[in-house]
Each structure stands twice: as C-alpha cells, then as structure tokens.
Image 1 (tube, helix red, strand yellow):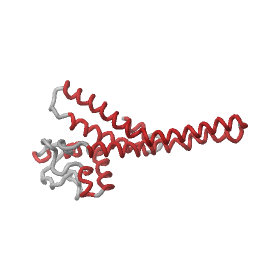
Image 2 (tube, rainbow, N blue to C red):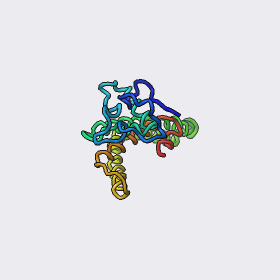
Image 3 (tube, rainbow, N blue to C red):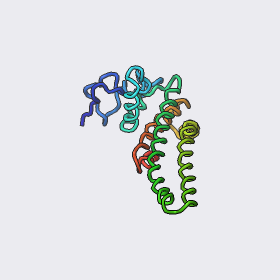
Length: 201
C-alpha cells in the first residue's frame, strides 16, 4: 500500500519519490544524518510556519508519526527550542489537568459548607484554600520540575543507549528527543479523566 504525505507537510520539505513505500528500505534522503534533516521540526521553524501551527504540527507529528518527526529534528545547535517546547506544553497540560480536578474537589467541599455547621464550614474553607494554593504552586513550580525531570530522564535514556549496542549520539540529541516526546505526550493531559493515564504510557 503506497502512502504519500499530504501537501505542505512540514515533515517533508522535499516531495518524496513516487516509488516511496513505508514497507521498503528508507530512501537515502529520509535517513538520519548528522545535524538532522533539512528544515528541522515544525517547532524549530515556527518563525516560518507561525507559532500555533508549528506547535500543533510538532505535537501531532511526534504522537502520530514519530519516525519522520525525529528524523527531521535538528541534532546540532542549541537545545533551547526543545526546552521551550517541553516547558510550555507540559506547563499548560499540567495546569489544565489540575483545573479539571477542581469541580470534583468542590463537590466534596460544598456539602460540608452547607450542612456541617461552623466547624465543618471552616474545614471546607481550609480545603478550598488548599486547592487555590495547589494551583498557585503548580503555576510557579511546575516549569522547574519539568526541566529537572527532563534532565534526569534523558540522562537515564542516554545511559541506556551507551550500554545497549547501537548507533551513538551526543547527549544533546537524547535530551532533545526527551523534551519533544515529553512535551507532546503532556498535551494529552488536557483530556479530562483519562488524559494523564494515556500520557503516562
């Protein structure tokens, strides 16, 4: 079955050969090369594509077509684009996930405020304050936690790649893959109830 990329696909800056098939050996122009494929990920070309389109195309590409996404990733240069992507998407996903929990927490607090008397109402008020404190701490601390987690996870991945026989890459390449993969899966946290479970997989 022949599969061709859609027009204006940001992961294929050059049109593929007519004979291109996913079940055949990868043509030379699509193989990994030092420095990545021409152009880079959509997020790395957001000045050309536009901020929101580049963000969406990168998330969609990493989740649905990771082979071509990471083949087009720039393996040289600064890692700030990858860090910005992970922190931005991870922060938004974490915050939205927390906001989804507020209605359920308030449903638990509301009966105590209306039926439990003054002591129960004070306790419920403390619980509501705890919710507000959780949101505030998430806004401030989550970006730092995301960055620390990315460093630890990418170090473990890189150690595994060193021990496991295979092609060798620099740590910055492993770190970028970790950031883009973590950022794309963090976007699933905006899905109520099950988004966090799916993102964890």
